[in-house]
Length: 331
Ligand code: IYR
Image 1 (cartoon, rainbow, N blue to C red):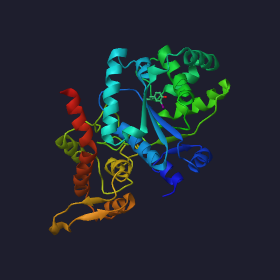
Image 2 (spheres, helix red, strand yellow):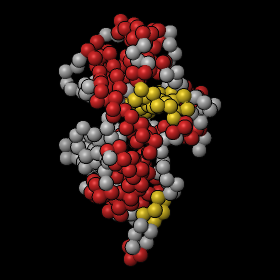
Image 3 (tube, helix red, strand yellow):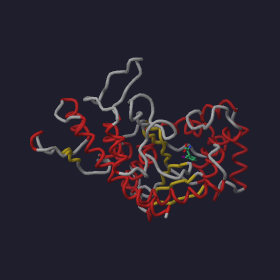
Image 4 (tube, helix red, strand yellow):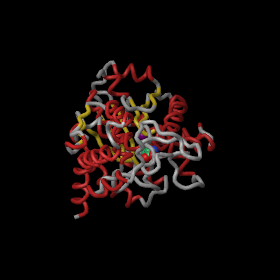
């Protein structure tokens, strides 16, 4: 796979392709980041962007993970003290998940976001931006339905992070795209350069395949799930015998979340996938890529129940090191 394909594989959106192509010509030493509002335990959404960071690390990028404590505070996620405490635990879980500790720079937002220069730049962007523009940028990130002034400041600071952390590439879930678009508009007003972004998809709700998987409502996979939890969640998941399910009764689009997890979580981290089956049901199957597994589900060669069993095994392998770290953190 060439560097551009590795940088963009499994991405839902690349802004812009030309800018990322230019980076892919010589990725060595270029800096890419994701920012996360610290929370106690990683969930499958964190793991999806982390998979992209692992791709970028393989392509030669330096990786920066911003533990965005000030942002979490502005977004009403708790007291500063509480948030700070979770940031450290989150860092250890990312390392357990597979981000090379020596090659990943973990930065706490409050280490530089309270400096005078940064604060004055934030105010300069406040002057450049209308409240309605800032609110629009926050619509998929915001906690609560009645936006606070702090939540309008939040996306402006996220834009400045790209400059202050001296980055070449911003990575995030599709829920971050409106902030990254705002950044492209406002950074040049301070004579700062625009930087490209790669956005990962948001996976579908596990039980229905309709709408988004969410850590705040519905079922999500988390790093504290036991093997039995994972098996139960996967077994209850929506998995029709097709990669492209029909819309539901109300006409809402549906996805196959079991296949999505194979695509975005399992294949990027494992050379091949083995589905164990008793001899009488045809014996084990081995897949080198996602498409061949999806084709077998489509054709009926691979039964959803067998696919689910294998998915729970692989998810358990991905989650186990982080789960052990969490147990250690709590003891
Ligand atoms: N908005 C992110 C958190 C965040 C991301 C970046 I990239 C920043 O520079 C700052 C904060 C979230 O929704 O978790």
